[in-house]
Image (cartoon, rainbow, N blue to C red; front, top):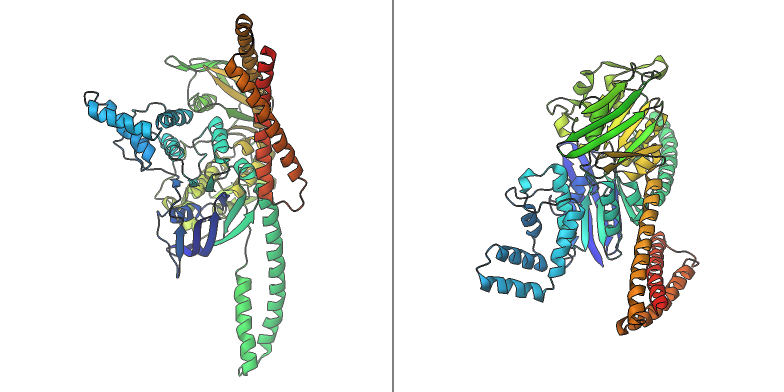
Length: 622
């Protein structure tokens, strides 16, 4: 079923063309990511598709399947400020949510028994009681806990999580998501990944989360130089096919350039008066010249700013403690940083990670203990709170206020304008005001201002938000070669796995554990612990049941029926497992089919394991 069709759509802002005459289609079941450089128009395209901005262009068409429920998560969601969290969630056309809203309202007036009876009757008709519990479960999962809190008191991150919760609660069939992982902690992101993996869900998403792109996306759209390029498959497929596209385009460009030189020689040899044949050839030359002049430049950010040398002592923490009231942030933390360390910090939102960073940089004082930086240690602190770029300044002025010339490795220097070009700010864009930059472009500029100070100890608090994938790749390469220490707080699992050597895990109540490994290593150990805990719980439950059964004499009637059901279900699951495994041997399987089969096989194995465990419990009791 066709969910969305976009034809010949363009969008311009003043002289800037974001995209021109682009067309795309989305079908039911497709899980599509949109990737592009910052400032290319990703968010604008999503807004056009969601009906938030008008289409432009001759013969432009936007067709959305009428009966499909659509959900749109904006980058900066907007709510009625006088609503509470619960009122904001219940502000929906969904029939079940309307019934819950009516019931919640009736609860405020318990004396109106007639209205209460109607509300309860409506909840019964729509089977809305379980749905109400689901609303509260989803809000709690995304750490939106005080349902009566006014929306106007929420931070930007809390509003984003509220908007995401509201969207999931409404159960749309087609979802449009703009950077959904921003402001989510790692547990929330994994939970969202599981939700988006549902086979009946269709989405179009802007994200820089490369594990999302690899694990759950089966199509990727690239917005490049105002055109859409379509790739089937996941992130790995995208990288391979994009490299092939560039190779083909460069080969075509070389052919065109050689032909242009021949034509140019011919044109220069011709007399002023030309015949019809010559005129046609001149016209062809003009077209060829235009084609070659449209050369695509695949530029990347270049980061080679010189870092200051480190001394023997870098940074030491001696038994530091910090609390706010009864809430312990850090308790008894001691550590001596060594040269070239790459440390990741993980923990749920609100556990005190940012406060810990401020303690290390001495912006905050510990309640007890000492922080001792080395004499040559120079911090570069990238934080979302610190991104206070003056909106009325031009990009070039922001950099020149720090320095006119920037020292590089091997004694070289760059002017401020040359440095900005290396960070993908063209000479023309350097004259743009900060207020006109996209979110990702502002972050790129802010990162540049941090690196210009030649730090040798980088602290990066959520550096990946809104940065495009190419910039992330270059930043990762820079950090891997950076001749100093790096501490990273990030919800980007791919970024953490690529950079860090070990983790500081914030476990709550002031406890910080040093874990030797990256994020994926940590999560694998955590999952195995969770599986072991479940096995132990099942064992304990089994022992309890056995003791009861020994007293009561074997299985009861209901358990005997369950045992027979399980035997039948286990046989069916084993047959399906065999079918899937045989399906993998089919030649010419599409990448999306392989992905679907892999997910189904994993689900079948998990269900089979659970039912076999339960069957063993009942069999032993019998």
